[in-house]
Length: 165
View (cartoon, rainbow, N blue to C red):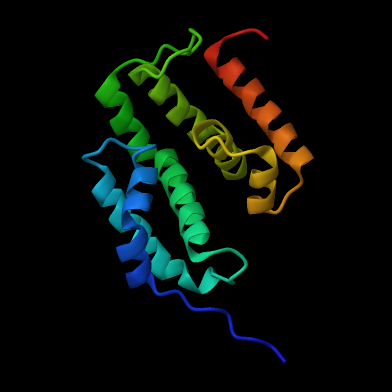
């Protein structure tokens, strides 16, 4: 006997968790851009609702969808040009040590350059403070895989910043 895939009440998710999603989006975008991205995320959720299988809570599914959407949006070529116009030249040759505008630009560029899974692992670990075990469980990979991917991300960031080990 097969069971039907669970359905999502996106209206209820929006009402109950819209602020959480908005807060998540603000990790990637300025406050004035966040409401537009929020609407994009929920439009995407409507399109992707059939991908929800009930393996995770609806909010975990929505949180993952939000992260992937924001990362994909950052990789968009038009968005990259807008961002570079906003902040000017990017100092690729200096190490990033504090959360400045330059650091945000550096990270946005790095997220665009790496594959989506690697970017997602980096966001969960470095921005959200999730443990490697929790990330592995969320993504369905081993903790060792997460550790290896974090090392790969660290190496890519160091190379992009023009730093040495």
